[in-house]
Image 1 (tube, rainbow, N blue to C red):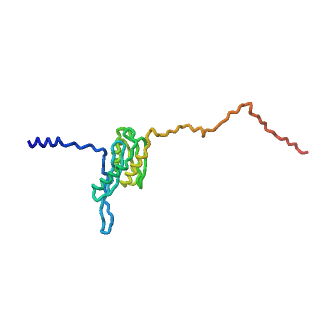
Image 2: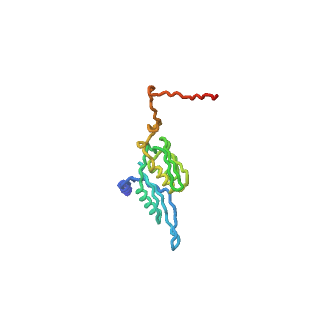
Image 3: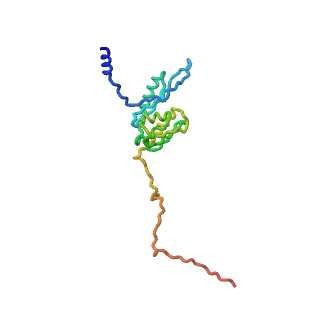
Length: 200
């Protein structure tokens, strides 16, 4: 009977609701501040939050313990969401941005390539819903600056419908204007030569 009661209690448990956002802790640092009584240690958390549908944000916060720092960072990340213009599980064009000493370059990739990225950029691209892309860090590997540079690169993407294409032809204002002149109106000018007589 005891086994049956345990099975019933397990079956009657409510299933956990799926989370709307994917919250990932990217990095945690232990920082210290000097006060009158000595050093006070805190924790600094870097968190990336996204919904895998183009919305993503990052947050940095400090707390007395790891849990409070992460909770604060998640709240900051949700308030700083950006909308990424996706194009078939990738990005529409190349994008590059820098923050501090970090410089992040992101390129689109064909289906089946996957995410070829590392560190902070990979986590942010995953929670944003980008499945095929290439990323390269061209500067400092500072995690907070790299995260901010990645967000700036994603925020600067322009959808394909807003692209402005230029034709190879020169604009009308830049073309040389040539006027056609009728042959009847052309006056022929013959060069005049002066005859100089020799002095005797």
